[in-house]
Amino acid sequence: MIIRFKRVLVWLALSAAPLAGAQAQQPEAAPDTMEARVQACTPCHGANGQGTSDPYFPRLAGKPSGYLNNQLLAFRNGRRHYPPMNYLLEFLPPDYLKNMADYFAAQHPPLPAPAVVDASPEVMERGRTLVTQGDYAHEIPACSSCHGPSLTGMEPGIPGLLGLRASYISAQLGAWRYGTRTAIAPDCMQIVAGHLTEDDVRAIAAYLSAQPAPKESSPAAQGSYALPFACGSEPTR
Ligand code: HEC
Ligand code: HEC
Image (cartoon, rainbow, N blue to C red; front, top):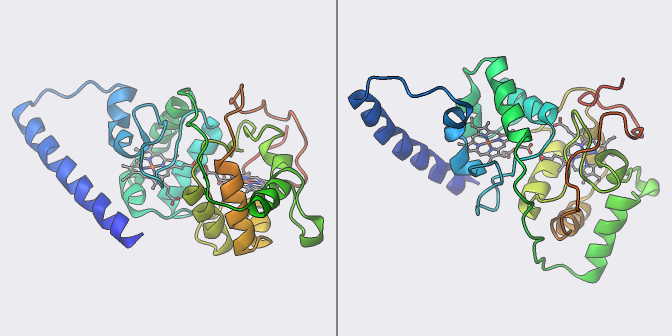
């Protein structure tokens, strides 16, 4: 994590320097299009928000706009921690963040091919059970009860769980378990992740990252199914 962070800081410093030089020679302002604004994001998130080859930088494309906007606010307010993003968003106004969330939500590059995972059939089966049925003895609801029967999420605040890499999924579940990522209260994911063991997290991450993309990967419409309990980031109508 530290090594990756240093690499990113070097990258930010290198990419900012030639930019400053170019601006000094060209006083005319660059056109203020959304494509120009999101250039600060695409080295890590891909030109259309589809992600990059880095195993940790997440995909943004096609996630519900309300979800993306909540995350941008969370990085700005310190509810999520990743220093390059915390610095980048620190001084951006809310409507600017909302426009970027809308931009990435409207991009629909195909989901990546499922990962080839090195996990035993027992581990994959544990992952499948938790995701599709839950484990009532351990108070774990099925992930699909909120993220949808085809795991594509629901407007406006619940993201899909497919097309994410195992390392990213396990880091996010870990962040909720340890309290370094929080969402608007009631924070459903903190409750859910609090009931998972390390082995559960590994099984879920392996299973999810190995699933093929569904035919229709857009999030379900708001209110298309009832959640098992209320989430602060998913307003009910
Ligand atoms: C230096 C690389 C880097 C840059 C530049 C960057 N991001 Fe990120 N972004 C990340 C990483 C890594 C995460 C995951 C952090 C975590 O939670 O551990 C992330 C997370 C996110 C998330 C949450 C994704 C999710 O599914 O929850 C959003 C939204 C986001 N970034 C948007 C942006 C936008 C918009 C920009 C440009 C203004 C940007 N990022 C620039 C690396 C970057
Ligand atoms: C009661 C509803 C609910 C249940 C059950 C639930 N989730 Fe979530 N999940 C949410 C909400 C709401 C968010 C968005 C939180 C936010 O705004 O940051 C979320 C976000 C996530 C994210 C972040 C995705 C990203 O791109 O960063 C992951 C990963 C996740 N959930 C995994 C799971 C897994 C795995 C399970 C099953 C063990 C599960 N969830 C069960 C409601 C739920």
